[in-house]
Length: 454
Image (cartoon, one colour):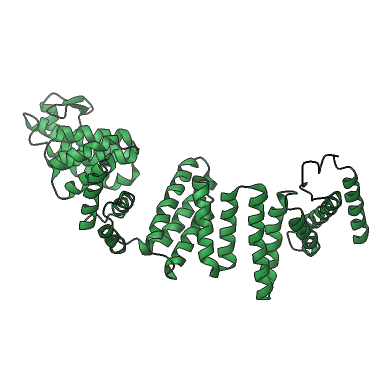
C-alpha cells in the first residue's frame, strides 16, 4: 500500500515537472530548485512529507508517520528552502518531536542545531525577523539552557524589532535570560532593570489594547505577574542605589541614565535617599522638562516645602500622560491643603478627578477639608454642622467611583454622620429632612438636610 502511494506521488511530481510554466527558470533560480529536474524532486518530496505529516497530525502527533515525513521534509528544507513557508512551521513540530524523544545527547544536540538553522533559513526566505527570532530565542533557552547568552542576544534583538508586537513568552524568556546572565556574571545587574522597563511598557500597551478580550487580557496580566516575580529580588531600594550610585558619580551628565534612574527610584518609592534628590536636580539642570520638574516638586513636598513644591508641580500640567497629570494635580492639592488654602486645594483636586475619573482619593481629600471647616463656616450651630453634610456627600461619591477607597470612605461617613444636627435643631430652623440646603462660606455647595441618627 505504501509503495503504491509513493508511486502515485512520483507520477504526480513528474507531471508537475512537465507542466511547469516555460519561463519558470528564465529569471534565475526557481523556488523549487535550479533546474527542472530539481523542481520535480522538490515537488515529489514536498508531496511526500506533506501527506505523511497530515497522517501524523491526524493521529494527534502520536503515530510513526513522522518517521516517514522526516526524510522528504529534510530534502525540501535543504534543497528548495523557498518552496513554501509551511515547511518551517511543520519543521518546528517535527524537529521538536525528535528532540524530545532522542536519548543520545549528541544526536539531540544535532537536532537542536538543525532547529536553529531552520529559524535562520526561514528569515532568509520569508522575513518576519522579529517574530522568528522570538521563536528561536525561546526555543533555544527551553531546549538548551547552557546557551543562555546566545538566547539573550536573540531575544533582545527580537524585542528591539517587534516592540509592542512582541509575543508574551518572548518577554518572559528575555527576563529569565537576563537573570541567568547576571547569575553567571555575564552582565551587570542594570540589564534586568533596562529589560524590565522595556517589557513593562509593552505589557501595559497590550493590556490597554485588550480590555475587551478576556482571554488575551488574562494572558497579558499573567505575563506581567511572571516578569514581576523575576524582577522582584532585584527591585529593592538598596540594590538600585548600589547599582546606580557609582554610575551617577562616574557620569553625572548622562541624561539617558538620569531619566532611567529617577523613574526607577520614583516607581519603587525609593525617594528618601540622597541619590534620588541629586539625580533629579541634575536632570532638571541638564534638561528642564515637565517630568523632571514634577519629580523635584514631589521631593520638595516630602521635605514639607509646600510653596516651592507647588511651583514645580504646576509644570506637571504639561505632562503627556494623563495618570501623571492626575498625580501632579493631586499633589498640588495636597500642598495647598497643608498651607490651609482649601479653595485652591479643591480646584486642583477636581482637576485630578477630571484626568482620572475613577480615583476616589481627591473626593476623600475634599470631604476632609469640608469637615475641617466646620468651626469656621456658618453663623450658627446648624450651619456649622451642615458642613458635615457636604463632607459626607464627597465620601459617598468617593466610594461610588472607586471601590478601593470604600473602606476608608465608610469609616469617615460613620464618624461624621454622628455630627449631623439633631432633629430638634432642624425643626427649630424651619427645615425638614430631605430639604435642599446651601452650605455657604468657601464651600458654596448645595446638599440635603439630614438628622443625626441616634
